[in-house]
Each structure stands twice: as C-alpha cells, then as structure tokens.
Length: 519
Image (cartoon, rainbow, N blue to C red; front, side, top):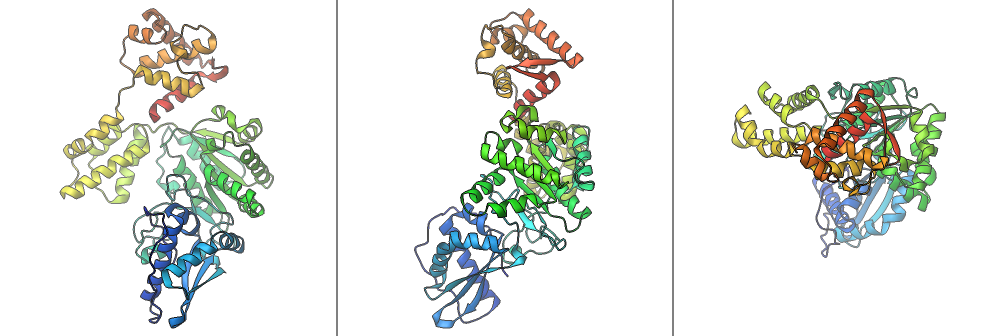
C-alpha cells in the first residue's frame, strides 16, 4: 500500500480546479497517480507542515475500488483504532473534500486500521523548523510495537533495512538510517556520557533516569538515537520511544483537551525505553511538568529506562521545579564537552569514509584544527568540500580545502569582543544587562564582574586598561587582581556566588563559554 508522501510545498491554499482520476485501467501506474493526486490536494488543503505531522508516515492512502463512470473509493489506513478515530473525527471533511477535488464527486472515503502503518498510539508533531527529526517510525522487532527515530536519508534507501522504501518506489526520497553507537566518536570530551549510554542500554533501569547535557552540536542527539538502536538489538521486542520535549508537550496538551489522554499515557508509560530530547523546553510549563513527573514515577516503579538530554546542566534548569529535579538527580548525570581535536578528527574521517569521499590526512587535520566549535560545523565543512570536488571534477587537496573553506574558517574563528563576554555572563546567570558595568560592589555583582574580566583576558586580545574601562571604569590593576583571584578559585575548585546562586567555578566558566560558543 502506498505511503502518503512528505513533500514540502509553499502553497497552503485549497486548489481551485478539479482533475478526474483514471478509473478504468486498473493498472498500478494509474492507481499510483490517483493516490498521488489525492495526497497533493490534501497537502495543499492542510498546508505542508500540518500534512507532514498527521499524514506523513502514520497514514497510508490507496484506491480501494473503482466504479467506472460512477467513481470509486479511496481508503485511508491508520495504524491503530485510537489514532484512526482521532484522525477521522478531525480530518474527515478535509479528506473528503480533497478526494472530490482530485477525483470527482462520485468518489467516497473509507477509513481502516492497518497494523503495517502503526507508529505510536499518540499524535506526534514535527518540530517548528519543519524537519522530521525526532519523529518515529515502526520497526518489525517482535510481537510488541517498537518505534524509533527517523531522519532524512539517501534516495531509495529504507531507514530500517537499506532496501528501497515505499516512498522511494513512488519517487520520494527515503530517510537516512538513525545514527548508531558504533559510529559515535569517543574521546575525553564525551567518554563518560558514552559509557553511561552503553550501561543504560545493556542494563535497563540501573541508571534511570539518565540525563545527558552539553551545548548544541556535541553529539547528544547521536547518543539518543544510538541508545534506541542498541536497546532494540539487545532486547528484541522491547518498545522504544524517542520524542523531543516539544513533541511531548504538544501531544499531551492535544490529548488533554480532547479525549486521548489515556492513549497518550499508555504510549509513554508502557515504553521499555523512553527518550526525551531538549529537556530545557519543559521549563515553566506547569501542567506538562506534572505529567512528565508522573511519567517518570510510573516508569521508575516498573524499572524502565529513561534518558533525557538538555543543552544545560540541571543547576541551570530551575524552571523544572524541585520535585522533578530531585527525581532526575536520583539517576545519572553526564556532561558532553565540545569535541576535542581527536574527536573532531574522528568525526571528519568517519563521515568522509561513510560517504565514500577521499580526504588526505592534511585535509582532515586542517578541518579538525579550524572547525572547533561543534560537530555540525565539521559536517558543514565536509559538505562544502564534497560539493566543490564534485563541481570541479577533481579530488580534494589541501589547497582546494583552504580555498573552499576560507569563509567558514573566518566565521568559526570570529573574534570575541568585551560586549560578547558581558552578554554571555549576564545570559548565563540571569544578571540584568548593564550590571557588570556599574559601580556596584555587592558580591552578587562583583563575582560575575571578576569572572567576566578573567574570561576577557582568556578570550579577547583587549588590553588590561581597556578591560578595566569597559567593566565599570576600573584600573588595570583591578583586572590583574580579578584574573589572579579567579585563577585561585579554579585551582582550589571553589564555589562562588553568582546572582544569588552558588556555583562550582569550573562549571560557571563552562556555562559562559557555552553561551559564547553558541554565538
């Protein structure tokens, strides 16, 4: 049965024309054209993003019967009765209108359940940027339903078995396989997090909940996808569920306001492995936080494994509330640092080998040396090299790499200004803008100001007098004293007060540098 295709379109308007569907040939090509036309009209009617959310992969559309001049019947297959009932109640009129527009007034719509199209028992939404990252698709792994993350992939390759997918057979690009732990490059910056993921996959419940945190682009999503794959390999028939916090929130609220809350809770609380990305998104959402907390309690009582990922540590997530934070701290917390040179080099070499791109060692070294902020930057550089090589019809050389990546290198090595330091410190600790340039000497302001001076010496080329002048018109000797004091804090692993909160000094410095690195 043909899957409903996911194709971005710029038009969200209902079409103003009618095209009769072929009704007499009964051939596969005619059937496919009929289905494609219905999908296109429905996509135009609902809008590309809304269509991708509800009909992208959880629904199959096909021609059930053709009645000659009188018309025919389109069948909409949904994975389970709960989802089918919800979709029928919400979109039946839209589907009927799309079928009439595409095929004519004589055509009807039938709704069916079909286990082959099952994904999850709850609605899941596409992130705001319109990608399919974090969504779920089924994997035949035993008697119990198993779901896994899906990503965009190479044309014609199935996300699960490397075989031509239903989308590719219809001319639509398939999705790339989810990232696996075998392809994760391990180094000092991520070794603890990787070890925790391996233990959680092999011995579920011992390290639950597991919280992975670190800045954007350090490999958190890779580990989340990887543990889902490893978990299924080690525990055939187990149910894995990977969601972003935004998807969890939207699905929960939609279920709460409709009649699907029991189904939503079954989908989350019956999972053997529940993985939720972007934990920080829950901050301040009281109703959702209560649901998350109850879900954590339910899974913990059953000895199930939970994994969360966040772009910051738990100390910076006060918006989650003390109850949920206490539960999260009762498991395992592991930080991922920005990739060091060996990890960056391994990422470049590994991705190049996977793509079949031949890169000399000098080029790998050049990319790993100059693209230092995060893994996505390395992938972007490799994309540029591969495209340049294809365009010129020449192999990648060190000279070509320097020329092709010149603008990316300049962007990566952008200079840090004193204003950037001030903004990062204020943003990291919730300090009012302008406080560090004031004459106030209270400890809640003085300690952040001293930290800012220390980081200004580390990350900028500004002179002592320039730094002192910027931060409250202080002398160069004040800057020297601040640098010495913070250096002693670091050596003694002291705890300092920043904006009424006590911080480990090394963690405070990492937090500011994460903000700087993110730009």
